[in-house]
Image (cartoon, rainbow, N blue to C red; front, side):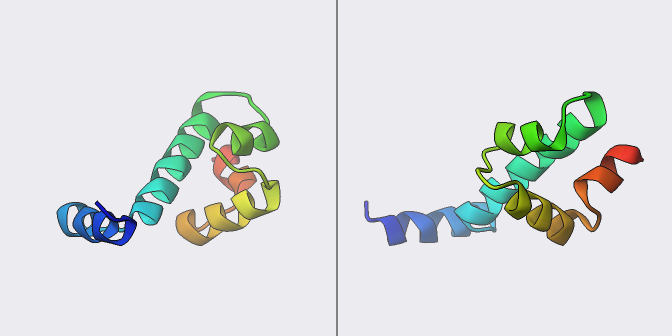
Length: 74
């Protein structure tokens, strides 16, 4: 099973790419942690698999519509 064939089958079955599914899962976990814990945003970004806090914050804002700190304040 080649990488490209697996990606094609995955997208056909689930309706989104593997990367988008991974990003969505990471951001859903981040939203959960922001809502249900007092953990810092820096630690949450690490817990969700991001090595770079800035990348996490930009991606969060792009897909969720608000920054992680704005989301946490809600």
